[in-house]
Amino acid sequence: MKQILMYSMVLLAGCSGVNNNSRARQVPPLRNAPVAFGPISQACMASGRDARSRDLCGCIQSVADDMLSNSQQRRAVVFYNNPQLAQEVRQSDRSNDERFWEAYVAYGERAKTTCS
Image (cartoon, rainbow, N blue to C red; front, side, top):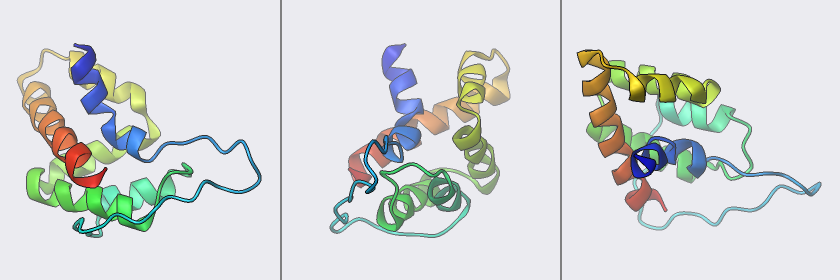
């Protein structure tokens, strides 16, 4: 269960960070990682997290384009502003939520390996 929660938050963790200094932490560019632009990359860049970068957010979007439908991407975007909703979807017994969560976890696993 902990592993599932970890994968569900991979996008949030990938774009997270704490700015304890006046300078934001510099994130090295991703090498050989695909980059795309879409709703998830926009949410990632708008998140205000220090570790975000165009390369990282674009890589995450590229994986989403390969693994999630447009409606699933729109649903996942909400998690950037409301991480509690991810927990609610994960725990839901509704078949639509279960199918979405299965796809989202697989997406998170691939994003973690591709974009880190």
